Length: 112
Length: 247
Image (cartoon, rainbow over all chains, first blue to last red; front, side):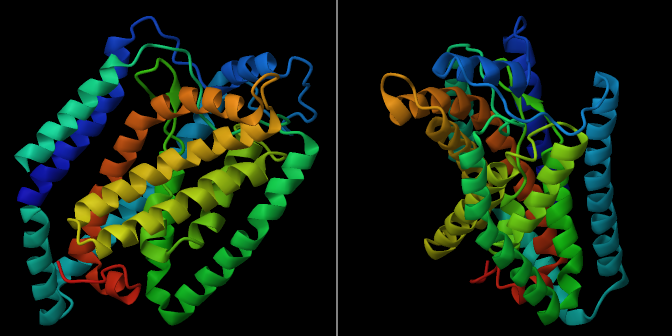
């Protein structure tokens, strides 16, 4: 189960990387691209006007977060399916050969 | 392992010392590239896109079993580019997730998958845009995967520990995507004094710092998925010649 522990630690590092900025920069806006991008470009070329508008924009922040969540859910859903599928396949045992191979490999991963 | 951990912690502490600044780092927004640049990047991306289609066709023909892995590569990019994460600079950006697919399938396949992700975001989320789709595909789905693939192969050749090759590939693929974005913006919006170079320095200084911790996250997540593949999909990895040497 060492591989599991290792994954857990790695995931904790990722979480820490995401939480840490929130703690350090308490007053920051954590805004996204759009406004700040306009600022920088406005500084460099004050007379530039965007010549094309988005075909469709999410009517509100809620709808936008809905669609972002949908995007993440679709991706994560498939990854979950993938993991379950191959974990199941291995537990069913697909021949002695590949089985030995995977166990050897798992040990190698742990040793890294 | 211990020394590596120390290095990692040190690197993270170093990030702390960077001054706060407002920054933005994401895809180029709709309408924010002049028409000629928009067309230029579309044209430049097209051959890579075609190479990607052919590459996918070939991979699936050789072994239909890799379809699941293709799905995984696409799904990984889909999730990661939906996660807008806070960065130490006080602004948000998101990882790209294209490194994994490039390691598995070579540099071209992700051009198609990345394009689909970007199209989804441009049409449904007003994130990026149709006029800037060529440029954004070039940075995220051409340069990123090319860099990731080259770095992974280099790591294999230098016999680096595999987790390190995977990490560096994903990390630098992510970072170089945003370096490319700043080059693209600098080319379109040269500074009045100092020209393209000055603008590039400006865009890059803003970009790189925001993206560094996110690229680290992407590297780590890619390691986790790759380790799963090593344990469960060894046959497919060998089929795709991802593992050029024994572990």
